[in-house]
Length: 132
Image (cartoon, rainbow, N blue to C red; front, side, top):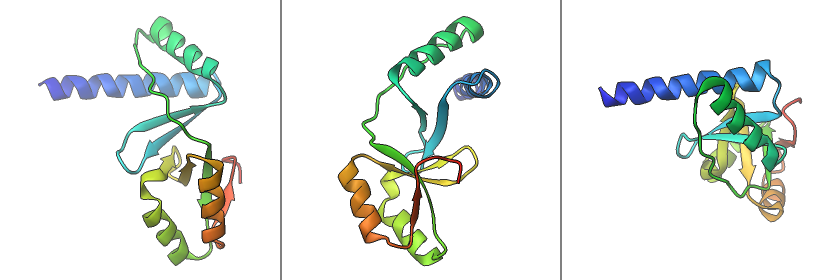
């Protein structure tokens, strides 16, 4: 019974967030962490989180709490070399996410980590926007 209530609340929050992020054109990107299944909301700056939180509460009656992550950059990845792509995703599993379209995203936590990944995996293309 409690799990049904929690699922309904989560479903409602996700619908409300989707409504805000698409219909009302907030500058957000949503990811799902492949390591733990948690949702990650990416924005351009801290103020955008506060705007979303305010709008969820005042327009939908939904409260939320943000937990900051220390990430350097989200990189959409692709490759013509399926084996290298699979090796990359296995090696970087805890840093992998999927966007709303199900595309692979590498969540680099520092410039150094990103540069090392680019050096170690020459056949992976790293895109810094979702429009590629």
